[in-house]
Image 1 (cartoon, rainbow, N blue to C red):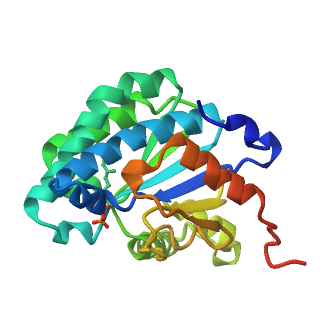
Image 2: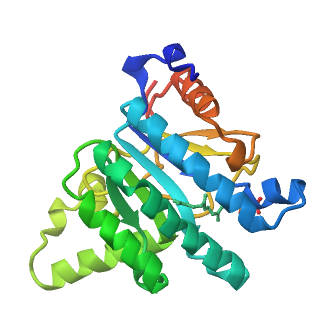
Length: 241
Ligand code: FPP
């Protein structure tokens, strides 16, 4: 049973971002192929999405595949791409029933057809939902996201559709994949690594960071509660006093 009652309902993060790290090490520790770590990691995706719905979090962003992850062995890449298909096949009806709206961050045009088609189906089927926004970062890079925004802005300016005086930190955010959402309050990275790895570089300006020592396949709902509890103890000043 989760310790949800430990949490202060008035201090819940509205947007949580997670760098799901440590699948490979989890598998290696057990003498298994890395793909087993990703498979177990997918189970935690299901748990943490469910917990986020239960805790009435508005946005959950999961870093599933970065623009750099293509450098991994082909077998591992195709394994992760297959898990995405399995996740959608198994979970789509539950996502729909739980009022979860899927949003993709990143360029999915490079994904294998089967994975891309699954993702597009899930986007369509959840598009009218109004509950948790589940952002899945796929072939995503934070710098690329900012450059993409800058290009869209330049394009609009060139077409005379944009008044540069109206462009500020808030309106710039409308050109990001997280358009219309709260900025992440809390970024969680399990596995003990202390890096941001090109994740939501624009959006994390005032995020709190929580680094967990457990590997992602061990990141249970209780670990999630621990991270949120840690967040609730922080004193957020946004540059003020
Ligand atoms: C990082 O661990 C994890 C990934 C690059 C893949 C994450 C994918 C999943 C959890 C599976 C499916 C996702 C969805 C959304 C259905 P790592 O391999 O870098 O671990 P290591 O640092 O221990 O090697």
